[in-house]
Every structure is written in C-alpha cells, then in structure tokens.
Length: 219
Image (cartoon, rainbow, N blue to C red; front, top):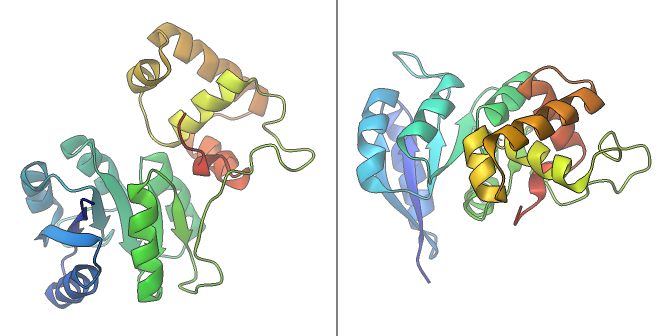
C-alpha cells in the first residue's frame, strides 16, 4: 500500500524536525518535503506532490488563514491540515471556509496529529480544538440525524452542493464532480443559501460542521 505523503510548513526548524521524526516513524506515512515559509512551500509542493500539507498559521513574512487558499492553488490534489497554536473557533471556521481539510492545535497529543493526517488524506474533516483526545474527532456523517436540523429542508442535491461549497470547491469544480452545469450549481447554491438564511461561506461552513455534513464522502 502506498504511503501517505506529507509536506511540513512551519518556520520553527526544531518543530519541523520533531514532526519529521514523528511522521516518519509511522509505517503508512512519509515526509516528502518541508518549508520554513509560505513562499518556499508554494514553490516546492508541486514537485513534492504531497497528499497532505501541514500548515502553521503564524510565520514571518505572513501566512495566516490565507495561506490555506494559496497552498490549495499550488497543490490542488493535496489536503491542507492547519497545525497552529490558535484555538479560536473563528480561525477554524475561516480556515475550513478557505479549503482546509483539518485543524489541530499544537498542544494536541502526537496521536491526534497522526489521526488527523490519516483522516484528511481519506477525504474527511478533522478538528481538534483543545489538544485532548476527548475532543479530537473525525466529523462523522450525521446529516439530518437530529430533529430540527437546519438542513432538513434541503433537497439531496442542495445538500450535496452545500458540502462541496463548504469544502472550498469552486462552482466549476462542483459542476465537474456532480455532472452539472456551472449555472445549475450556482442556482442550487443560491437557493440553498436562501433556505438556510446564510450570506457568507464562513456561515455555511459553520452550519455544515454543526450538522456533521463535512464528514460525508463520495459526493
């Protein structure tokens, strides 16, 4: 079985060394590159062809959550896993809205980071906000499982579009994935946003996370 290829982006050399050792010790993972700043990462990730990129949000020269979007553009097939000291839920919502597949605080146990890498590589969403095993969890498929869920009024197709938009895909991407025209996708998106009373992608991501939709696969 092919190993999960990981690229590390962090300005602290000692932390990169520690992550490289931790990840390299796993039989199913391998580090294929590392960078100390976002510019270097953007230059190197296309050649490294990683499956997962771990990204620190606080680095000299600037990065922040906008780095998620820039890395996704540089390596469209890679999943971006935010690894940061920031435990503010607002950072999580924004990072996911920009296309991050996971969010782990640096105080998390080593096992949580490894679990996160494996989860996002399989197309799932992993969020650990407290750095404890009690909270670190893959968001499972629970859409519509609770009475009164805000997505109950959506059609199956609108729910599919909601998931794809929340994951950061463009209308063209969604059209290609679902076999629809871009105009049809945008129509579903507008209708879905209106039904939910949402105005921004961050709001949409929040609803998708709360309803467990981001754990869905195969859409």
